[in-house]
Length: 597
Image (cartoon, rainbow, N blue to C red; front, side, top):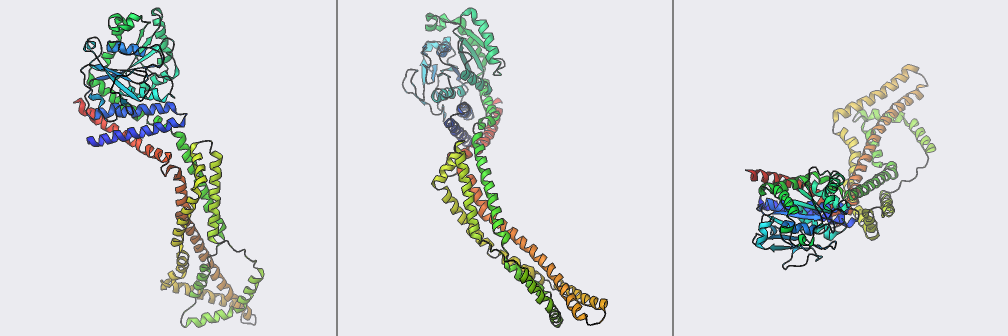
């Protein structure tokens, strides 16, 4: 993949995840999922992006994280070899990330596009309790390099991890945690099992971050028991596997002021653990990138699961819309098509029967048979008129469609009002009906109705004409049917004569036989025409669905996710994120293979 494409990919993926994270945070009950999305977004920007952009592996990054007041700044001082970090007994004193690096070390690691997301670098030193979306870099004296991880590592003192709802602290912390090649998780003997820090630790372990745990502030004689309890009650429950755990008991004021010379007993084992995890730097950085890419792939369902309720609400809205479409179509069929006679088919039946009469000289025979049927025809006409009940006039097509639309929209409005408190999607739909959603739907209906009129303009007439035109275009078939009809008439007449002999009652039997054979032909013709009529109804129903109810249902179903709404952006993010993760994994795999040679 070309370098420009890789940069566009990482930028787009981070942006989509960032939007999704912000969307979850606004929901109120998805704060922990929002945190996981921020970590994923930050992994793309701060770990994978720089690697694919060929950033050097050194310096590696160590992030010191943990709950409030557990001693993170004290550990940061031990790692950096100074007392530069403002250790303070006040919980929450460190409110933005502070990086400690060597006096002459490079700062190119902070120049990558999107580095630390919304955090801006402070140009001047500031107190660690400055509460803003910033970070600062503090260069330490050259002598600190002799007694610390510098210059091969940058040491980050991070804000507290207290609650997922703390959007400022937590998301500043997550930016640095994603950047880190090694995590030092700090807990005190009083607060090593707090819920939020433990969840945070579990998330970092799932992301593949190497972790070293430091338990602080206990009595030295209690350290073994507390370490054992921490491993059983915390690490085993988060699936940590083998994680190094060190104890750093209460430190005196002298040890806090000069950790290099006075706290070496506790400091050196910690340095050794981190040094081992960072050797060699190239392998450590490849591990960070590989685990970050794996985390994005394996956690994808969980990352997108934060918006599962949104998707469920959108799908439920679509289901309700489609139920309304079914009722709309059924009402059109029931109230219009079922009672519509399509009189052109009755005319086609007459034309078909006339077409079966013999032409030319045979016309005289057909006329003679017609005359024979006169008594029956007159009697039949009288009986039909006497027995026929007056038919209720069918409703015109347009009023039926308009009433069906009104019922459809009314049912959707009522459903939106009923469910408005269950999810913002329904509240958004209700608000749409209070504004102009109904009017917009009627405009869509009118557009579809015009297209429907154009498509059905000659459908019925064409189908009715085809009943007899197909016969006219096939003389052989037509003549066969004519011959069969005439033969049936002759057979009926001959049969009546043979059965009764030539006698006065032939004046009754012969016309009756001719009438019965003709009636049979009419029944057969009517059955055929009625089947064509029903086919025309089905085609008209399909045309209505294609041009009226179908497009309207699709528009209504998609309406909450259109017009610049949050749900439109949600759909866009959900389409792009899986594809972006897959492409990013392919790019990482290729880069790691090249980097290993």
